[in-house]
Length: 263
Image (tube, rainbow, N blue to C red; front, side, top):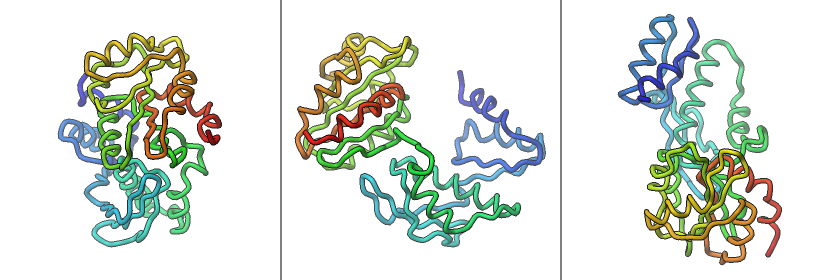
């Protein structure tokens, strides 16, 4: 129930004499990781302390950056295939891990690093994280499903230029719905739906909870139904965001052909 307790569980993966990489410093959790690493004689590396990422160009589906390690530019003009703002932090952790692997004798070519980070989606099938489905109108899938992730998501949305914001969202009934809804913007048109799983929260119940926070929209019996109603309402300069639940995004991806076909 606390961050240190969660960190203690996470630290269970730390093994004797195996290097440990922590992405970013958090004063409540970092001491837990240090204590565990020291207890099993493992070196610990803080990525954000050693790796610096300078963004050169950032567009909705494209990030180009310079990456420095220990204050030395080692990867100029690196292109990230995953373009959510949080991926800028994630790439620091990746680069730190790569440099440790190289230190211990693993051969990873520079070309592999450039190509690997550029083509994560193609190489792995990784989906649903700031995934741009089409541009005119702009449609983005993101499976942020807790308040922290949603806050980061909507901060990035604010940096975009669009006319109207349409949001398809749903939830499961064991999440802190109120905390999540607090992260959603009021100036959007909502399409509330129920993911097709036993834990799915009824769309009308979600709509009523959202209404208490002045989030206005209609409820739909399924993700597909919400999509069928949202898409005809889009103008070329609008943004449709599908978010709030991994299960909602997964179902939406199943209907991706319906989205990408010209209306």
